[in-house]
Length: 224
Image (cartoon, rainbow, N blue to C red; front, side):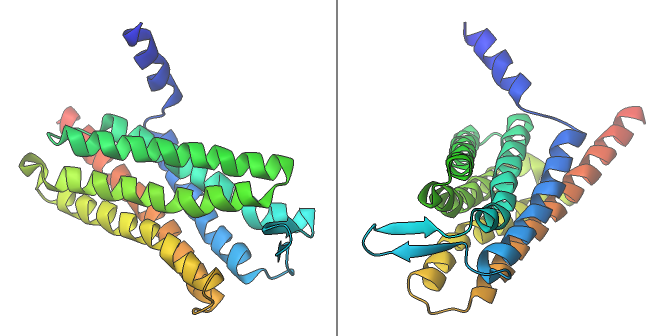
């Protein structure tokens, strides 16, 4: 029973070029989200109602346009993170498992955000994205610590990979407090949110290229 469950999980997780493309496309979509969600160039899509206690959708088409890139970005990058963590070899199994749990939680929050898009409920979409990004960042941060503390992997490009995972994780985790400061406290202009989302997206693209180069090097060593 456990073996069949493990096989099912492995089938749901990707490997190779599919994971890298998920990182590339997801990274671009995080950048797109930052532009639309924080700058709202075509006007407001939602407005907060004090009498209801949550935001009400004003224009359905804008609600989809502004949030769908983020929903897809979260689903793609969380899936890519889970797939990468499945193949990650490290002696720090506790950190790796914690990272996998948080990546899985980010995936579930992506599904919550997607459900909000389908049934047109802003709190579901907004909540899923606001929590999903920092939790995914935490997963990457723990993955970086897991690799970084493994003395057997501290050579050359692996050190760069550790740095990329940790920095990308910190950027992802920073989206929660920055979003709170922008929306709840109104202490920062929205362009800060755009910039942070763009950094998060760029980080995923860079990570994808780094893992691609590592794959190429491993393949070259295997044929040597």
